[in-house]
Structure formats: C-alpha cells, structure tokens
Length: 126
Image 1 (tube, rainbow, N blue to C red):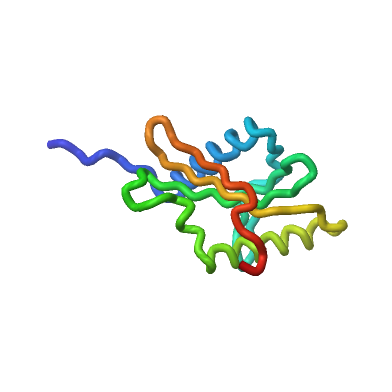
Image 2 (cartoon, rainbow, N blue to C red):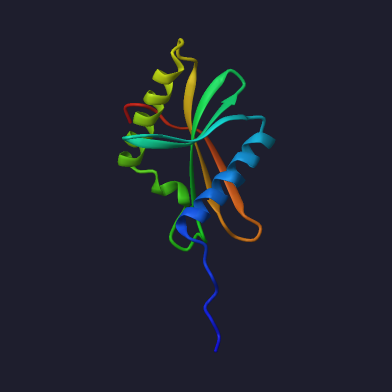
C-alpha cells in the first residue's frame, strides 16, 4: 500500500517560509528585530531594519504557483490587519516613530524555493 506524501501543516509551512524570508532579508542587508509580533487585531510576521528604515514584513508562501503568486493574497483586509499590528508595535516602542514602510516577501516552495521581495509593497490608506 502506498501512502500519499506527507505535506507539512499550514503552520509548519508558514514557520519555514518565515525563516527562509528572514535569512533572505539578512542577505539583503536587513536586520531582523522581531518575529511574529501579535496583537488582538493582527500579526506582523517580521519586523526588520533596512538601514534607518523600520520595515514591517509580510511573508506569504505557496507550494507552487499553479494558483497564482503568493503576494496576490495580500488583500485589503490583510493590509488593514498588518497596519493595525504595526500601530500596536509602534505604540509599544514608546519613542518617536522612525521612518517606516511595509514590505512583502513571496515564496514559492519549489526546489529551489523562489523568493520575491517587494519593498514598499503598500502604504497606509490604500
């Protein structure tokens, strides 16, 4: 009897994708300062510095690109939740807000994985 291949859970795939994204960003010169910052209204996958800019990074992945690019899944509702979590993160800093932006990393989990970084992927008010 043959078994179907074991597929990682969504949570395990997400954690692996975030780790892959963090390593990619570090190679690009980012400094990771927080992971999985959660608040009641949303979560930040990664918080990083790119030089003097504080970046809130959303990581999206898919097993393959048969159903489209993973970055296409960052819809208006998801952006609102990210912005909400970013505001909570900034309020917790208790210091003047630095220059900031919202970046996104899309990962197609092929072999080897394809990683796409979009700097300034969206803005507050879009």
